[in-house]
Length: 106
Image (cartoon, rainbow, N blue to C red):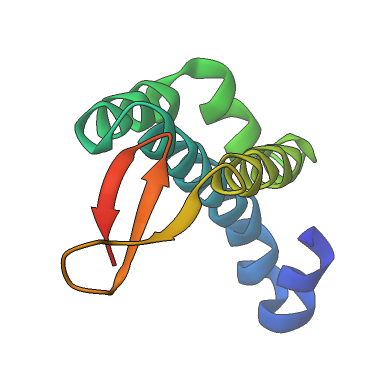
């Protein structure tokens, strides 16, 4: 992943890729937090993770930890989404989602 930045953008792409992966890691954590505790708490959790010193340092240097975070939190998002049960709503005949986040019509 880090080498892909240098292949696509040269030196600028190589220097930008760790920050992009760090941003994706924060977004995937926010997606997981949004599924588990709600949207507004997810924003607060993303902010805390984004200003956390270890996250800042690993997002500035070419390390594998942000990519591992993306894969881990993305996998946990898929895992929590697997608990959502699709069922027919009684009123309109559309699909309703019932699961960890409550009922949402969709």
